[in-house]
Image (tube, rainbow, N blue to C red; front, side, top):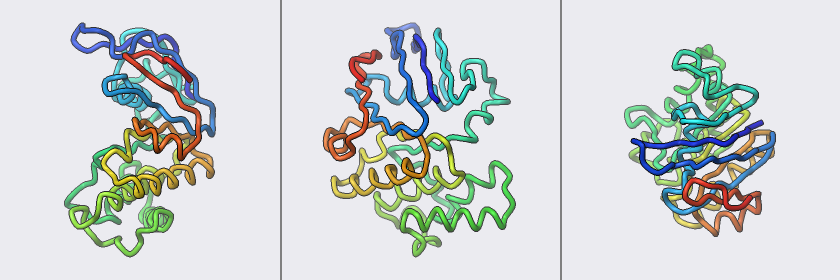
Length: 218
């Protein structure tokens, strides 16, 4: 499903952020992407999502050659993917329900379908009672659940998560991990970037370990 071949990524001509990196992730896998700060975890996720270019190599996501996408057709890649951030990136002036429904409005779903799918997504993360609340009035764990609902609402084949438990207490972090595992059981391929040994021990999934832009173990 995801294939990365000999990819080199540099910023401003400095040392490579990704140094001739190769990896492969199969459909339906749950993979932890780990390594110290600056190892290249976020950069890989951004490349897979079409947010970052790269100097050399090839990246294939569901058969799409990411390096050949333009700004006009990158939606062909992203429409089957969800992205969850460490800092949630919720829209502060929209309610919980509106934050989740917005992800569907962007791709043109009709209002009846939007309402149904938004309600289902909120139910799956246990936050239907908070549907009219604004992000500022939610806890960190609740905000991350909303971010997950937003990522899952379009039933993506792939979900990319960039340190989604990094700002959360350990107990809440494990609850968030379980939500991702439920999505994985429903068919989504999950790439979960984390530096937390506790999360990786709790998850017991394949680990791709990065250091200085290289895969050091998998």
